[in-house]
Length: 443
Image (cartoon, rainbow, N blue to C red; front, side, top):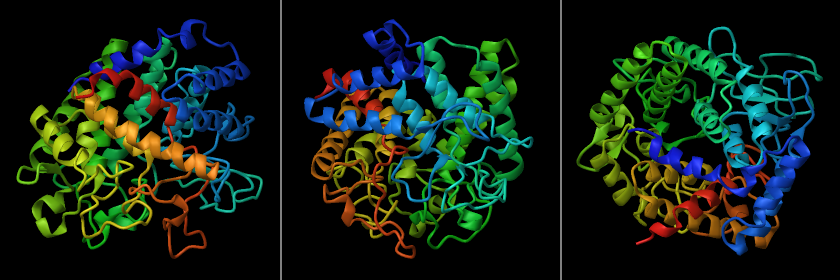
């Protein structure tokens, strides 16, 4: 499934007044984001968006090793920071486009230039002063640290890179992006290849939560081994898909990457799909129905364009829009609300707005702006209501519209509630833009 229908939404943004005269420097970019906060979406959302614009600015720091450019952290309220990276950064970049194109490009290059020679792209970088430093690079208090091979992150940076190039017309980064993505594919094939096909995250081997979904319900009682995970397989497919697109744009041979993408797509459509329930699962859950949970990761074939149109319709109508599954009062619940494993603990039921964004983007890809609009509006309404009540933007939210501070995080740690002033999983500007673009398509 081609990404072109969604890119049409993005390109339409570039014709607006915010992109008519691209800002020349960083201060002007922050001003553009503040202006957007006052005009985007519902008036009730504007105080929240103004706060988020200021939070982006407050979370950005001057260049410091290992970063060539200014760098943006996960959020000033993140207790294990200051930290950079993981998939949080992708959501920050998408959120800041189109108001902050130069800053977005800098964050992308900061991230890509962390890549190691074997293709491994680190997940999170803990800067000096961080109370949490897992080790890897640097052992002194004044050096940044990051893992060097056991915990990467979902490689969604390719989406932010393509969005940046589509919106700005800047192709200066294309060749570097192509080199980085092909090396990362090589790393996945060497280190995360499942048998007989597909890819896995280290969640299933080390419980390192490489998927970004800490303590995910899918791995509660799973026999460890290199088994195909639905999210990892879709994410590597997406790497191959973009590698093929970028190869064609550069005049290079796209066949090696297109063949990989086609093979993975066929595998997901047939081996990771269950026709009886109309949803995608990890391979062990397809093989053994007793291992199935209503985990939101089954939406990734929709987001990446792997799903066939009939499969996409079922995922949207029977799962994403179903109040007994993912369409909670604040969607998208990370575990279906009627599933026995649903709870109010981190990634086991609560809502991460970034995942609502990806679900909406998947709906748009398959020609369902009505579904995207409904998901985004409900999520933004409750996020704004919680901001009005508490004066902060929370790491994640209650699916039933309750108080985020009453949710659990990790009961076995000192901090057992969501962080405040959190940027990385709150692409609220991007969500509001998509809500506006889909506004005329409600039933």
